[in-house]
Image (tube, rainbow, N blue to C red; front, side, top):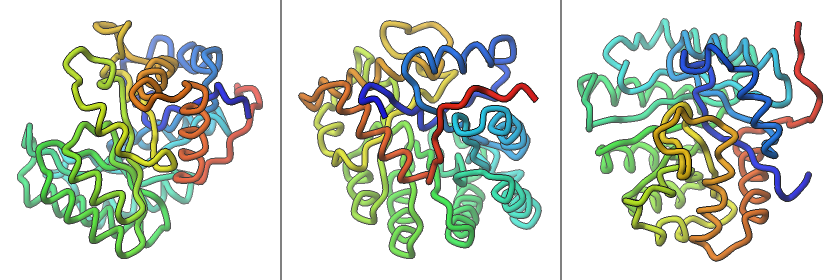
Amino acid sequence: MPAKSFIDSHAHLCDPAFDDDRAAAVQRLRDAGGAGVVCIGESIAAAERAAELAAKYPGFVFATAGVHPHDAAEFDPERDSAAIRHLVARGAVAIGECGLDYHYDHSPRPLQRRAFATQLALAKELDRPVVVHTREADDDTADMVAEAGSAGVRGVLHCFTGPRRVAERALDVGWYVSFSGIVTFKKWDDDDLIRAVPVDRLLVESDSPYLSPVPNRGRRNEPAWVSFTVARVAQARDAEPDDIAAATHANTIRLFGLNIHSSSESES
């Protein structure tokens, strides 16, 4: 694979923000050197849409299935676990986006922990990695990830901004850490965190349609712009962008078990 190619390890391509130009956004990712994108199913409904998109772009778009902590109050362990199992059978490459969010607290924290624990257990049962969202839930996230990782569950802390001790707990059990366009923002001041992640555990992502990187701040984000994040991560690590692109490309394939290929999109 060309060293310049990269994979967007986390994008919400089925968000309504892409309803007018989803196919064009996929093509722009190809044109920018993107080799693929992991389309996040942060709800059962979104995961169904992600599965349909992945079927349209085999070998380039890959779906996940899970329930975001914001929606944990409505999480039904039996019903939603069954739905996630079904979506994994259809090809979902990971469980999530799931996790804990104590910043917004849209769902009560005990229910967030229940939903997260259930999805971590599903990841072990189904032998799929977990895509984890964490915000202001450092101790609980670190403890739950460390316990799951020790039991053989693998995963990634997505759109990670710290603190470093949480990353270290995840790295200690073999997990990965992903950086988004946040690292290009003027307020970003923790290049030490970027350097602390071993190159073989490093991922990059857009988290589109959110968090557009500089120089596109204020616009809807899209997967093609991960190239700016790659360049910024490379700068922080005193590395070549092509080398970071190649490393994160390989890491994303390894974590998610992706079968990347360059065939044209299906129009069926």
